[in-house]
Amino acid sequence: MREFTPLTDGADFKEVLYDKKDGVATITINRPQNHNAYSTRALRELARAFEDAGWDDRVAAVVYTGAGERAFCTGGDVKEYAEVYVQRPRDYWKYMSCFRAYIESIMHCPKPVIARINGIAAGGGNESQLACDLAVIAEHAWVGQVGTSVGSVACGGATQWLPLVVGDRRAREMLMMNPRIPARKALEWGLVNAVAPSVTRAGQFVDNPTDEQAKLALDRKDGWAIDLSRLDAKVAEYVKNLKEKFPECLRYTKIQTNQNKEAVWHATVGHAQDWLALHFTSPEPQEGMRAFAEKRKTNYAGMRAKWAEDASPEYPFGPPVGACPKCNAKGIPGQFKFCGVCGHELPRT
Image (cartoon, rainbow, N blue to C red; front, top):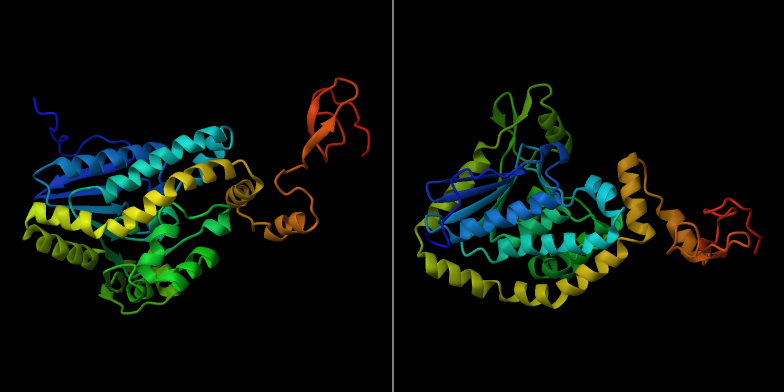
């Protein structure tokens, strides 16, 4: 038996759809209920799928996409973060190992990878499409980063690669201000290779749809709808072109073209993994995740006020400097009025 026997076509993953047909491997994040945010399991399945696609000699190109019409990928699953990694932040470093393996499985896949951006590509979703070789976006979709808005830093590819792709100033705008970059602007900035019309009314494609028209189409109201047929046609056009190239020449062209991406990635990603894991224990991501889960505005002003007032913003309830005179418990948060162990009233400081 060969060590590199390909996976069976239509391999049975749980959170990823994987199909191989006519020389094309199609990998789909299948979590539409979470806007195709990836879970830890999804990351591991995706990495395995890209590995298999790269090793399968029948495959000429890989198409990477998300299920449905609303999202390509929206990054990490905030619900999983809140339920799992808030409880065990030490495991977030392990999670980042899974994320690194996933991103590198795209970068190191010896076949050209086409991002079929069928909807929102935000946060780690934009980093995912940046890891791909080519990208085609549906006109109703948008791309962007969200790190500084949610208590994180987009150093899983965006801080490294956006300056290479869009230039320094535009990269800083995306990373610091987190604007939504609509499809046409994404093409203008070089974030994608092509835009495909996707918004229709009464069965007819609408050029340059407004945000409101795109929303009506996604909600299928008043005759508006989303049609991804032209997106698929453009992707098929790219695939056809790539099939008419020599596979080893394509592989080495990718390796050479990845030189700058590889250099900045490997120079920074180890540090990024450790910093993100440590930062995950701090109040910024906690507030960002709670605001998201509670569907409320994030309290940026409150966080900044703690910094300005020197109120130990690193701790939710003050630094752990208190001690209980009754049970001798130590490390009690400074704002606590009662001991969390025995309930005794604490002396005022």
